[in-house]
Amino acid sequence: MAIGLLATGDEIIQGDTLNTNSHHLAKTLHSEGLVVGLHLACTDNQQEIEDCISFLAKRHDTILITGGLGPTSDDRTRFALGHFMEETLVEFPAALEHVKQRLLRSHLAVTAGNKQQALFPKEAIILPNPNGTALGCYCWSKGKLLVLLPGPPRECLPMFEQHVIPFLQQGQRTDKQQLKWRLFGVAEGQIAQQLDDALQGIDCETGYRLETPYVECKVRCHPFLIEQVKAIVEPIIQPHIITTTEKKASQQLQELINESTFSININDEVSGGILQTLIQSPKNASRLKFNCLQSSDFYFHAQGLQEYWSNQQQAGTTNIHIHYEYAGKQGSEIHELPYRSEMVVHFAAEWLSFRIFHIINQLHQGVA
Image (cartoon, rainbow, N blue to C red; front, side):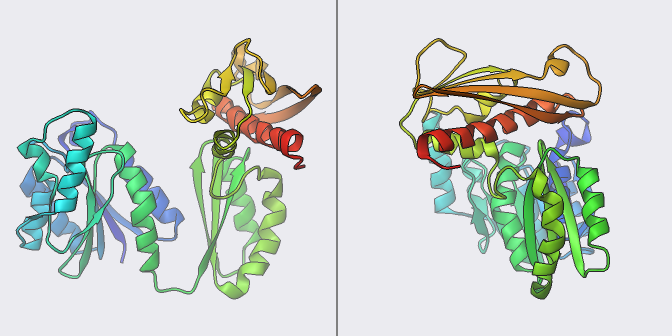
């Protein structure tokens, strides 16, 4: 059966907050080959939450519930779930310790409201939350799997991606395997049409997810079809691959700099500070400088996106010029990028990350 979604919160019902959690959950579930059913939203009223859970339970084997796990009096989701399950919630010592440690880091005292965040159904499996005090959980009741997730997207979505999706995938009784590719510089609709047309007649399911400036493409098929699918898909997508499936180019570059000892100075006249936001971290801030006169082992000067910065919003292409210096060596290169919208600066930041990563490897480590 399909997976039902319930978003709780007065702010959602009243239109103060856009329900981006359900949008992300549904899109990801669908792209993973999981069937999405009904979407519901309700206020913070405990009876409304319980009524929505009961309604979804009649039509779904799995229900994902977001919101209402905080420390305030209107955070009633866990209590509505307990009433639906006909169980008294119990305090989980590990959950309480997590709450205490999070508050301690912010020099805050533990309140009675904070303590309620450690209450769960006694057989629940707790989901960690490194980004906040609200832990999530799995519960089983009346033949249904119920999942609680915190409301803030910065807490909800990582928990969902890292714990819920892998768990739901394990429950699928199929021998089909999933192939994934992360593509750059191609429109989602364009590549979807190409791959769907190319794979017609083959027993497989395709899925696509936009994560600007990348598109994640997925194909699920039986093991004996994997090589046939790869032979069809890989020639089509090869021009659009600049990084691995697991990491973005900016993540790869940041890790390279974090683990190195050399210094880098980047004069970025392309991304408007986006590149710095993506790759600079406390681990590399002493060695990675932007737009300064300080000498360094590596020097990069990036220029381009003239059409964007001069407010010419037409579709087409735009160029990036990269000049680099290292150990007395100099070089430069020009690259053409698609220019479809103002998101071109995000494309440019990832492209710069890709090229800087490979230039550093080529010059410093001797990797082509």
